[in-house]
Length: 374
Image (cartoon, rainbow, N blue to C red; front, side, top):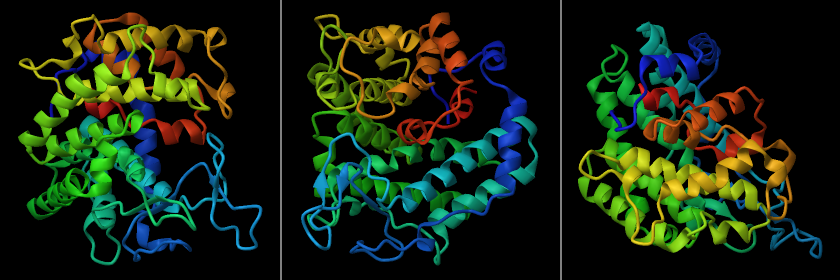
């Protein structure tokens, strides 16, 4: 799978340490493939194969004996929420991506064999596969069994089709496995584009709609669905960019949250992901500019100075994790290549050396950027 934005070999050597990538892949070789069926959620109304999660900022009710219905504390993550399926999905994604990167570097089939094992276990095997829908994501116990905004939980899957394409010609990736994986993503794409929860997420007014677009665009690209790819490009240009971005480069829907810094970085990262996934020579979203001058570059140039010096952030601090930022959001890398901007590339390289906490891992869609840029 090719993208308009690719790196030269010198840039790859500067921004990525191949020995580190291989070390991550070696760790993946010793990891058991996770799956949703090994974790049963107490409050889930679905079955063993149905992904389940709780809304992050919802807590047991202190005024009732059973804690129901849960009550909201915006921006404050409840550590007692059910997250096992999210962790399983992210673990599968990360290890598959790292193994695919190592396979590309070495052509050693052991990495491809293990990566395919991860993919088959999570998506295809009858006993362990996840059903291709998110009916029960970000449920609120005592209020609802699942919500449209839960679709953001599968944002981390966008790495997976890129990894699959790198593994396509390996001996481990049989035609049946490849077509089975394509079918899973086609089925999930159909669900998020036709089910009321998917439509609700597509039409959300903040980063949720942007993240819906990232997923729909990536899964459509993988399954050769040009109709949905065109829809995603159109919505980026005619809905998300004009309706969510101010002329000064800020996103007001993110600034009004209790984590304005985190959400501001997050939404820029995913607007960039859309540009990276969908841009072609004929329809280059990197270069698309609204009549009043707004573009993705407007948003990037607003947030980058505060990633270089977070102490200058002019808005209120995030209610949690502010001291752990800034983080190496991949938009710096992709935009650095797209605009030939050494400032962005240098900043990503510096931030990538920092340890990342769970909040960063949860909020960064792309875990192994190497496979997107080769």
